[in-house]
Length: 174
Image (cartoon, rainbow, N blue to C red; front, side, top):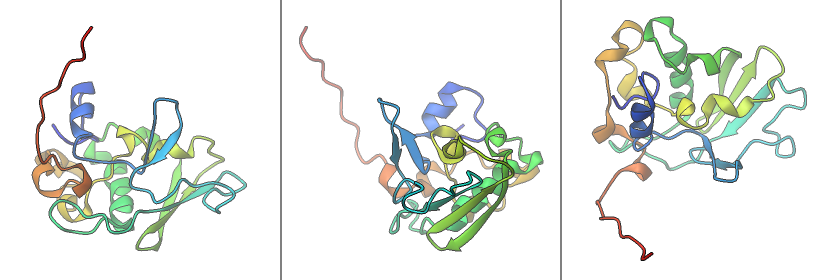
């Protein structure tokens, strides 16, 4: 199953990351790296509220799903609603339990408000837990219909993640 929010194990998580992206990931040194976000939120750039109760993400512009539809704030908001709908049965719902609201600031900015101070603000849309799904392709498959839409990998993955060629691995001597 190539839906990170309905994955039943690591094999599904790993496979889904080939076609879906989060707002940020951790690199090998445990440093946050933007993926679908234009920059990492900080107190200095106004992305992190000083009181720890909200985070504002600026999204990359010009990203398109592989079917040509634009990636926007609507996709981020929809993903949250999709994941938190109890009938969806998303395994990633737990990381969203502290979210009070996600508001669209503009087409490429979302503000997440938390119910309490949240030092782990990044967990919501990072790594496999935070993979964004396209609203236009999943909107008819929320709640009890979620499992009917297993994947749209060939049609609507974020374009930068599409596999264009497979190259055999080479081994280094020794």
